[in-house]
Amino acid sequence: MPDDDASDAAPDAGPDAPAPRTRSARRQFAATILVLEAFLVGFAALVAFGLRLAPPSVVWGVAGALALSLVLSAGLLRSTAGYVAGSVLQVAVLAAGLAVPMMFVVGGIFVVLWVVALRLGGRIDRERAERAAAPPPAPA
Image 1 (tube, rainbow, N blue to C red):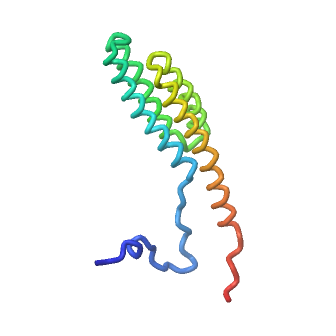
Image 2: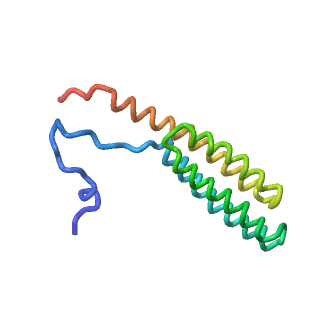
């Protein structure tokens, strides 16, 4: 049975081979938060529907639009506009607390996660860039 680590290793392609493409940690973290928030909005919609807080068409229409916006903004994270849209949608998720008060708590947790994802992901990306720009160590 092959070793799992060995199957993930790239074959030695030589010095002319292009460097492996690294994905942005900031983008991965932010996209994960936005998609998880889309699920959160779906669950909040179930609560609002079960409590009959509004007509079903309003509950599902608003929740569907918000969830779809969250998923679409996750796809837009290639540009700055995606991060701006994601930040604006954090306010919308918090505003859902007006209908379902527990969303103030859970939405607040996701806002904190959003900020941490942006800051920590950005720091990881900067450190990766510094490491890639540094000269290779001299052979011993």
